[in-house]
Amino acid sequence: MLNRRTAHRSLTDLIGYRFKRLELLECALTHSSFASHPNECNERLEFLGDRVLGLVVAETLLKYFPHENEGQIARRLAAVVDGKTLSHIARSIELGNCLRVSMGSNTDPLVEQDAVLADAMEAIFGAIYLDAGLSAVQPVIEKIWSPLINAETTPPIDAKSKLQEWAQGRHMKLPDYRIQDQTGPDHAPEFKIKVVLEDGRFSIGSGKSKRIAEQNAAAELLSKIEYKK
Image (cartoon, rainbow, N blue to C red; front, top):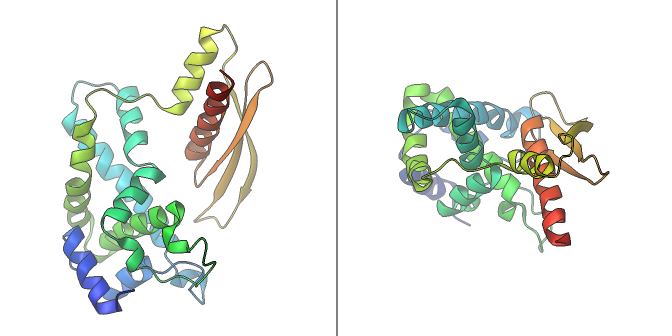
């Protein structure tokens, strides 16, 4: 594990931004398991960073694909700001070396968990926004996401759309999404959503927004369908 000063310098070099208020960066790197008070961890910054990331990437997509409609842009957005992408980017900049977490289990350290890395990545964007505004965080996000955006020549089809097309192709009613549970504080909720097909098959997905939970539920059900085939 790097010392804090070296870790900060390495991270800021990789993302291309120097913080004016280092306490914002430190907060973005602090997991709730380490903080002594809820407001000292990165959950609030992650909440903000999620919105900042969505706004910047959405604007970038509109600029890169001026002839695509709202549905196509929405599918691109869902594909490039998901948790898997965020955790991959976090690993590429060795973000886990900078995080402050409790020791946890030796077999499953928090710094290696996708959700922890993804949340910390969004928290950093929230911290940059608070440190210097949208004009500072926008080039950081565009630099990281431009290669991912350019890699997709056609709009991807998200899990909900795939499941809907599968059901319609078999003359079924549209999949039914139902909220099963909502936990966590208002600024960092966790949703659990159940998707049910007309024939009774179902799956449950969770996520920090209804949209993400629905996508995860649809993806899980598609996996079950593919496995059965």
